[in-house]
Image (cartoon, rainbow, N blue to C red):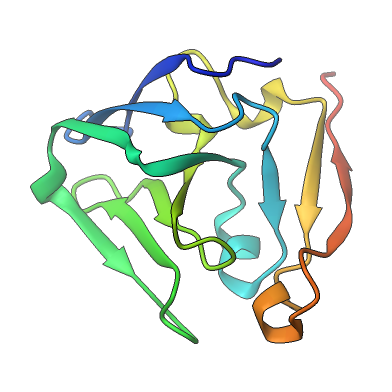
Length: 140
């Protein structure tokens, strides 16, 4: 699935927010997180550098949510409510991009997704990212 350097078109559900994104390591960074917020959101995210995202429309329609340390900034469309991306807590120089917003992709296109242990966050432990397991999807 490596797509390094490829630019992806992306949008929220209603199309109010549209953007282009260049992923840091293609789709190889696909992951979920087990923190309380990500568990409820349930999205698969991939990584992009902060300068790797270009908003085409609707940047003014984005709202943010932050909790706990307020390091991670979670962005969502204020019209349809869809999470588009977040500034990562474990690497504030990167965004996590919701793969469901990427044109032609969705969370079930990944047969296995790494789940990071966000409950025991690496910046809380100072020991690096913990992998909680791998979530496997099967298409029935």
